[in-house]
Image (tube, rainbow, N blue to C red):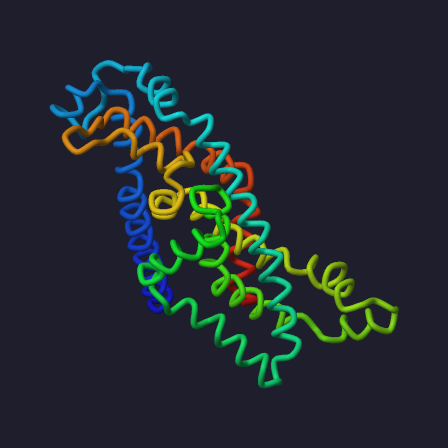
Amino acid sequence: MLMIKKRFTRAVGFKLVYSLLVLFAAVIWAVPLFMIVFNAFKSKQEIAVNPNGFPSQFVWSNISEAFTRGEYAESFKNSGLITLAATIMVLFICAGAAYVISRNAKTKWSKTMYMIFLSGMMVPGGLMMTANYRLLMSLNILNTPFAGIFLNVAASVPLVIFLYTGFIRTVPRELDESAVIDGCSVFKTFWRIIFPLLKPVTSTAIILTAPVYFNDFINPLLYMNRVKTVTYSLYTFRSRYLMEWEMIFAGVLISSVPLIIVFLIFQSKFEKGLVAGAVKG
């Protein structure tokens, strides 16, 4: 009986500590979010006097003014186009490459290609800036949305191939052999049989890449300064001598809305994708 009481006490204590840690983490994440929401509806003077408190009077015009001045209609269109195109391209390119690598894992060239892809994860992005600029200029896509698509895909290839390769290795080879017996080519085998089985890891890849593409700031700043994107619109609210904090907070709130809506709609699929991708990968 005493042992049961001790185990019960330990279990209750563990749950209490765990709950307090979760609550602490939630507060850390929630405080900046509430600060953004509150300051988005404050005047410039009130932000300077009371940046952490509840607004004494809601300035609703901040949202409409930030949306108009930041040209967010155009920004959402450009950021959405870059995000959608880059995500689709990186999924199909990496899934196909990972399928070939995983099904020829014992060959020397496959191991070499896999290591080359993974080595891309070790190279700091800052070292590639000059080379990227010269490459985009030679391709005549500098200051166009294609520059963002090209760079985002190139930066994500190592990680996404790593995820897909680990997952495809868990898919039985017997499926490929059955498809070949039925007369399927390699492409049909991949597209009709293997790729539909990759939904969990595909969801994981989307979660890890699409928000990064949408929130990208460095690439628009360096290589697409004639293309309005969501993050670059925020940059217009600052200058050398002036920081329009009320516009910046309103712009951050506007920029967050699309990703929040997408996450709320596909929340269950996101969670399943993360869990399944972590287990299978």
